[in-house]
Length: 428
Image (cartoon, rainbow, N blue to C red; front, side, top):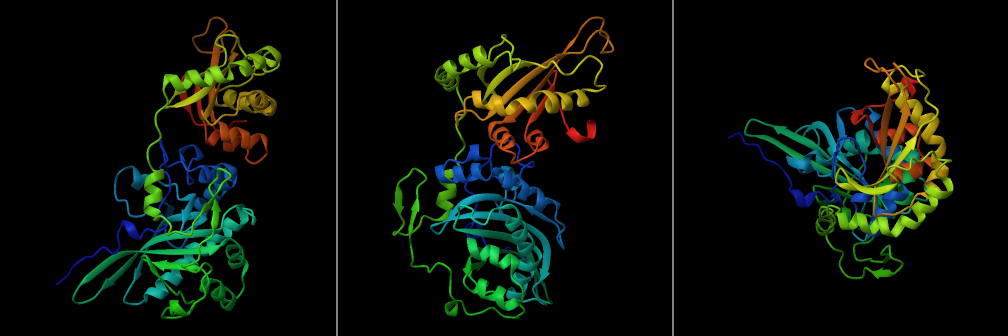
């Protein structure tokens, strides 16, 4: 009799994601800080966002022996969760704060020719080790977390005369922070094996003693583990208070469920509260620096709901893009950002309210094209370019953590209301 069996269930995805990213998911590999409810996880995601973006780009550009893509919910087969490619995030796992990388490896390993240990070793070497090296190249060694974890799903296939077995296995490897960096630079299997022996390793949810270069695994009971199962410690709640973890830790599933609740949509009352809170600072900005930043009086800076979130809208007049100086909307958009907006951002952001109550800043920049600049123009015409940028990306840019192109990649650019893709270097 031939039969096909799927191995494992949702509960065996040990490092399941901690927050559901609203909006488009294909463009990112890390979770948006704005989508995270837990204060400490949100702080970690925000603090290291530029490095996480670099890590995502590096992983995406890496060629593995078989196709690999980041994924947050490894067992999801349909719907939003199946399309969620945010496989890089900070999560709590067994009382530890981890930087987690998860994804799906498109290898179908022959279960007749390879044992469970050999399959796990192959995935470790093919996928986890290259990504671990990328982590150590982009994430600082003193990163504020307890460890770095990987969860990789792959196929195991066994074809015999009596049955056809095809299942999905999930390998989880959790290194302590120091061991993660040590393993990435270790030479020789003996040094690597010593680190693996004290790391937490699971295959389909069960403790596993992965043995490098061996057919069978090691006896888990004989191994040193970095954090004994009975040990618990005190961690920060992210609010300045210590939280005892002497009791059993909540399951990852319960943490994920609590943090995956959709964020409430902003209301006009939320907008009104922000406007009232920051109106004095906005008035001072317009009065003291409005001319320097070329802020327009109409409309004045105002909070508004755009695309389901609150944005601060600023109207500006670009005096640098002269009539006929740029031959296409793409070149004008690039020049307006690079020459006019970007140089002003560092000083401008000092005047702009920094508040978690809104996520984006909409710079609505207009300039004159001059007579005859457009095919149908017979008099002076204005063109308006909107740069709708995440507040976090802008502040990372002025701190020299990301490039201007990184900001554009995370933003929406509209020319007279129509969205465009913009590569700054290609159109200069």
